[in-house]
Length: 381
Image 1 (cartoon, one colour):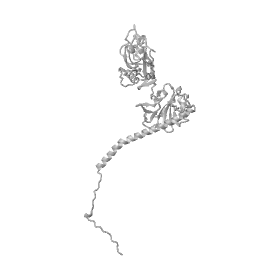
Image 2: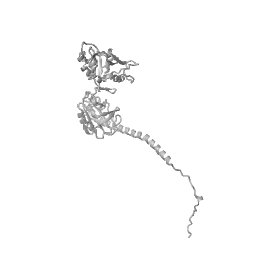
Image 3: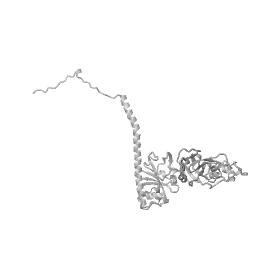
Image 4: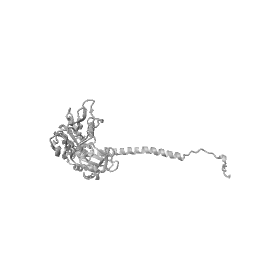
């Protein structure tokens, strides 16, 4: 039997076959990692933000649907309208929507984040307590905080007025006009920001702890002084400085306490409006009147003392003035006092709002301190 012959290969330097091999240098590796890092830094935040927005939108959609279904059931059972208080409404709502905790209007932050961002401004929830802080002055009900089983938290105000009255047989009823609600789809987690995790229904006009009669262009209007409703006499204004009535008598101590510096011998409706607001600093200024004018005429270019005229006839939005408590009649002009005035007993500043133009006036016509047809707007300080 022959032994198997093994092939013996004698390796020699000439038999070595070299093949080219490639490798990354340290610099190339570092550059590649840097590029990956830059791309990740640019794309990951966008991906995360998109994911968060979709998550908030999904949570809001689910909550809206569950709330709408609960309100429909309440309506068919005739337990939606006529409850009188937000507390009673939440008690009924809890029978159809799983609420794990309720908080009265003195302890809202036990159910809701203490601060949120709304309209770019920080809102302290401790400043809120009633429906009027959602802009619903006529409701006259408290806010109630709730926590929902799915983690959503909410602030609710109930509408006890006739506008909440609903037809229990209508399939179109959602009950949305029966409440104003602000809710947080992520509970106490950040960002606690409006249009992100914080949402609201259309009945939430604004969030503000101030007692606003109305709000327009960011201005909190605390009250309206009707034209011709009140005036200050010369004797009241001049007080200890009173002599024979004449213009530019220095105001007495009483009038100076309202920021009035001099007196008119006539019935002074501007001074009466100042007193009604509580102080001259509580009356709207030219900047505020210009901001309202931009809303009324649907523009953005009217400055403090600017004149503006429509290019296409009647462009005044009477509904804007009516919404803040200034009655208007079609075809007529309306004027509003400003807090500023020159050192003159005859003239104060005012802005007039015509059907097709607006401007400022001092000392004659609308700005005459004895004018009994000029309104005043009192604002929250």
